[in-house]
Image (tube, rainbow, N blue to C red):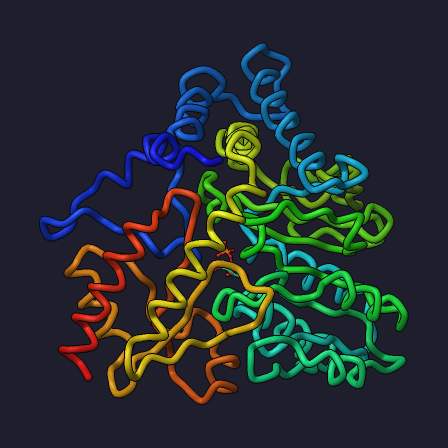
Length: 404
Ligand code: PLP
C-alpha cells in the first residue's frame, strides 16, 4: 500500500496555493515535481563535490567522477542494460534522439527508409526529417486505429528491404497508448531494421527492460520521472554504438588530438563531448533510489485507479471527447469540450488552481490525424489523489457550464 500522504510530504512544491486555492498539479506528462531527496542530492553535489569530472587527480574531482560513474551503473541496472558503456548521458530524450539521428544516419545510404508512427512527439520526427533531407532517406509513418492504438497490420506493410530503422514511442504523450514495443521490435528485426524506442512517457510509470524488449536504442529524460532537469539517457547496444561516428566534438570525447587527425575515446565517452551536468547526473542515484522506495509497480496500479475514476467522471460531462481509449493506457487523458477552445479551458482551470497542459503537445501530425488543433491534457503522478480528481471534475464542470 502506498502512503500517499507521506509521499506528498516529499514534494514541497505541492504545498503551493494558486488564486487562494490549493494547487492541483496535473501537468505531469510535461514534467513531474521533484522530491526533496533528489534536491538534497543536487545540493550535496554543489556543496561537496563541485569539481570537473574525469580531468583531475585531486580528491574532489575523483569524488565527482565517482558520483557520475556510479549513477551510470545505477541506470544500467535500472533498465537492465548489459554494459555501462551502453549508457550515454545526454540533455534529455530530444538530444538522445538527435544523437542517433545525426550519427546512425551516416551509416545509411540514399534511398534507405525509416518508419515512424503518427503519434510521435516532434522530438521523434524532426531529427529524422533533418537527416532524411541531408542523406536522401525516406520517412514513412504508421497510422493509428480509432482508439489510438497502432495499426499493426499497416505497420507490417510498411517494411521493405530498404527499411533500416523504426523509431517509435513506448507511450504516447497525447493518447496515453502503451505501444506493443516488444512485438513491434521483433517485427522490425525480422526485416533487419534497428529500433529506437522513445521512452520519455514510459519511465515514470514502468521500469523498462531494454534486453527483454531487445531495443537497439532507448531514450528517456529524468525530469519526467521525478529527477533533475536537463539530463537524459541514450541506451544503445554496444556493437551498434561502436560503429557509429561521434555526434559532437570537444573535450572528454577524444583519445588523442593533433592537427594531423584525432582519435576518439571509447564508449560511452565518445558520445559525451564537453562538461556534462555532473551534479545533476550525481542526483540520478537519489532519483532511482526514490523510485525503488515508492515501488513503481504499486505506483502504476494506484495511478491507473485515478485514471479509471477520472475517465468515468469525465465521460458524464456533456460535450466532452477523450482522445485515446485503448485498454493498455498510461495515466494520461487528452480531451476537448465541444465548442470550447482548449486554451480557454486551460485558463479557467488554472484560475481554479488546476495546472493542465493545452495545445498540440508537440504532436502536430497526430493532431492532424485526429482532425483537431489541440487538446487539454492531464496526467497523473504518484502524489496525485482521488480528492484532487474530484476537485478537478467539479472545476471542469464549472468550465463546461461557462463555455459550452
Ligand atoms: N518524447 C515524448 C513522447 C515526450 O513526451 C517528450 C516530452 O514531452 C519528449 C520526447 C521530449 O523530451 P525532452 O523535452 O525531455 O527532451
